[in-house]
Amino acid sequence: MIIRSVIEGVGSYLPENIVTNAELSKRVDTSDEWITERTGIKQRHIAPKGQNTSDLAIAASKVALEAAGMDGRDIDMVIVATTTPDNTFPATAAKVQAALLKPGIPAFDVQAVCSGFVYSLAVANNFIKVGQVGTALVIGAETLSRFLDWTDRTSCVLFGDGAGAVVLKAGKGEGTSADRGILSTHLHSDGRYFDILQADGGVSSTQTSGLLRMKGKEVFRHAVVNLAETAREAIEANGVEFKDVDWLVPHQANLRILDSTSEKLGLSKDKVIVTVDKHANTSAASIPLALHQGISDGRIKKGQLLLMETMGGGFTWGSALVRL
Ligand code: ACO
Image (cartoon, rainbow, N blue to C red; front, side, top):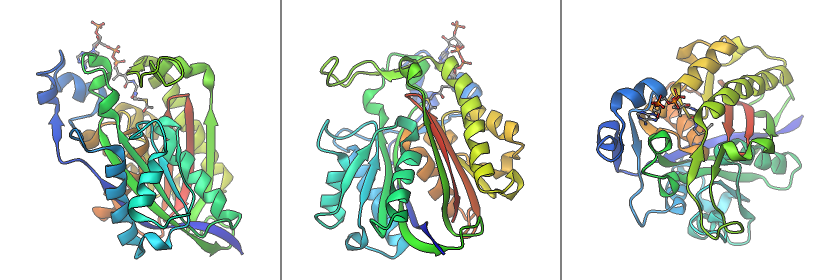
C-alpha cells in the first residue's frame, strides 16, 4: 500500500464581466477574425477594480471545499499558484487562510507563471506522500488583466482573469495506474529563456510590477515541443499508453498549441478539454478552471485518467497524470 493524493473536490470562479473580441477591437487595433483565427479565443473574463486575486481564489476554494464535503477546518495546508498576487508580500495564500481555513496551517504562494498549478500540485502531493499533511487546498488564481499593456495588441488579447481550486486528501493505493489520485508529476524549467516571456519590471529591478512582454512565436515553438515531451514522460512513468488517457486537461494558452500538441501525441481532439475560447489564457488558473468545467458539464467522471500539461514563463513546464 502507498499513499496517494486524491482529488476530493474541484471548484472555480470567473469574474462576471466578460469582454468579447469585438469589444476589445474598440480599444486596440485588432479584430474578432484575427484573434479567433490565431488563438481560438472569443472572450475573456476581466475582474473589476477592487476584486483581487485573493477574492477569486477564495470564491473558487469555497466551491472546491463544498464539492469535497469539507470546510476550512479540515484543511492542513494551502498553496496559491499566482503571478498576480494582491501584494508583493505577504502571500495571497495568507488571505485565503484568514478567510476560509484554520489559523496555524502552512500557507504560501508558488510562482511558476502558467505552470504554477502543476508545480503547486507537485508540492502538495509530496507533502501528502511523506505524511506531513493529510489534506491540502491547491489554488491557481490570477488577475492578469492588471499587468497587461492594453496598447500592445500582440499580448493584451490573449489573457483573462479567473481562479480554480482542488482539495487533495491522503488516500491509499496499490502503487499502480489503477489507483485514484496523483500518479506522478514532472517539473522542468530553463531560465535561459527568461526574457522571452516576462514582466518588464519587478520589486528588485525597477520597483514596479512591470507589464507583460512576450515573443509569441518563440513561446509557441517551445510550447509545442516541451508540452509533448512532458506529456510523454508522464505516460511512460506510469506504464500506460495515450489511448488509456480519458481527458487531456491542458494549460489553455492558444487553441493552435492545443491542437498541435494533441496531434503530436496522437490524441483525438474530442479528448481535449478546451476553455481557451471562453476564458482566454488565465495562466496558473487555467488547468483547474478547465478541470472544473469538464466535471461540471459531465464529461470528466470519477475514476477517469487525466493528463495535465503546462508551459509558461521561465520557461517552466510540466505535467501530472491523475486518476480522478
Ligand atoms: N490583432 C491584429 N493583428 C495582430 C495582432 C492582433 N491582436 N497581434 C499581432 N498582429 C499582427 C502582427 O503585428 C503581424 O503583423 P505584420 O505581419 O504586419 O507585422 C501579424 O499580425 C502576424 O503576427 P505574428 O506575431 O507573426 O502572429 P502569430 O501567428 O505568431 O500569432 C500569437 C501571434 C497568437 C501571439 C502566437 O505567436 C502565439 O500564440 N504564441 C504563443 C504564445 C502564447 O500563447 N503565449 C501565452 C503565454 S505563454 C503560455 O501561456 C504558454
